[in-house]
Length: 411
Image (cartoon, rainbow, N blue to C red; front, side, top):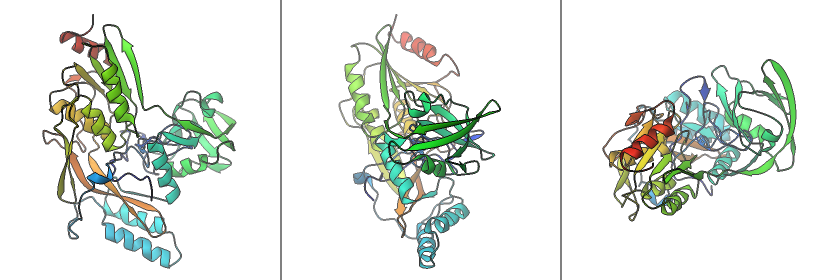
């Protein structure tokens, strides 16, 4: 299946509360997530991260084909992961019986205890691949699923069809073209919102107890994963919303263009992940080679290294929060462990497991957990996250400026 990431780190239970978030950049109607994941991306979908996305299915951290590990030992399987052969066998048997391979595979994954494992049909997964390019067809919504099954709008992409129709974060989505969405998986909501650019979609929602109906037309949408702005005193803020294709090089370009002698705030708050190759490229902007992370895939150890030639002198602060996941945690952990950045904000989400896709007989894709990754100092972030060097729940940029000021940057 062309365009699929070689392996992914994608969150499933992305919000530590009511909402399940996707790790990819999908967007209700554009995108990327599975039913049990939650945070979508822009464009009228749910996700990329991760993505998911979440994404992408959801959020997502993927590696390049050259980083693929070698063959696994057939007998090895870690606890909390689904057996790839059992999943494939269940799918094949279902196809032979004229049943849904995706449903059969998902049942095996659900029974396995693989918290991050999920199964997507071909269309869903191809949509996730589009999300990794930062493009999709949709209406411009990020949506999540609450624990009671309700679908709620997390945010709306500025300038999108949904934004022009007046939709806003906190709206609860009731139906799409007459089909009730409460109880559906996020990926199913995404599928309903997708379609050809220019085609209408009728959205029924509720806001403050009042029901509303909006008819919007799907559009080709794009997201800008990296934005740059300047603060007084020569401070450059580089905001990375997700690690989609090209985002790593954009970070490097922004660092090279920053004022000489100035500091950088690398804002990774709310970044639900993306492609691991892009994360490594972004980390390389601040490192001169060396280790970024290690990971294991079914017991086989691998390592990810930064490219040489990054800016190792410029003062750097990484801004993080509970929405910082997967690839974004990988970057933060590398910069923190190697003494390159001071992390300011709140503890990150803690998604440090690796998923790899397996194509099933009907073209659907099972993403199964195969291992974990660690920071250069050997910390496993899965379930633990990254603790900031300076805790700050509010006025985070102000606190970061104080840190930079303490090392001679700014007024």
